Length: 120
Image 1: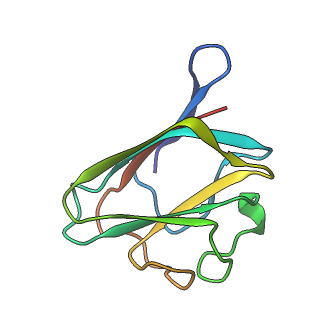
Image 2 (image 1 turned 60 degrees about the vertical axis):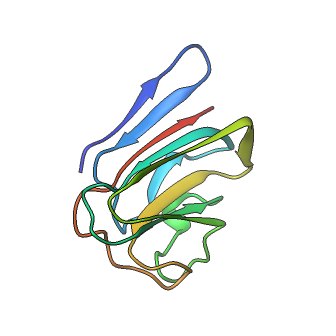
């Protein structure tokens, strides 16, 4: 799994994960505002679900900790979510990718599920 944070402009940053999976990943360990989210599920023949938490990744147990948001990306497509005014995560911003919606899902997508997040 290749994960990187790349500074963009002055304040914003780009978080890239070429193969998001079922382990919680920290985007930012403090308050964050999410402006754009790109999700590429074209490599998978089934839907993938991106779980987002307003919690530090170390405090997340995938399958037990209720996500603050779950976004479904249908099989073989990519989706972009743009939030011009931003979506605030007051504590931290963490995520994981699974094949089942809701809290209980714990199985990683079969093939690469790539995501990009633009945040401050």
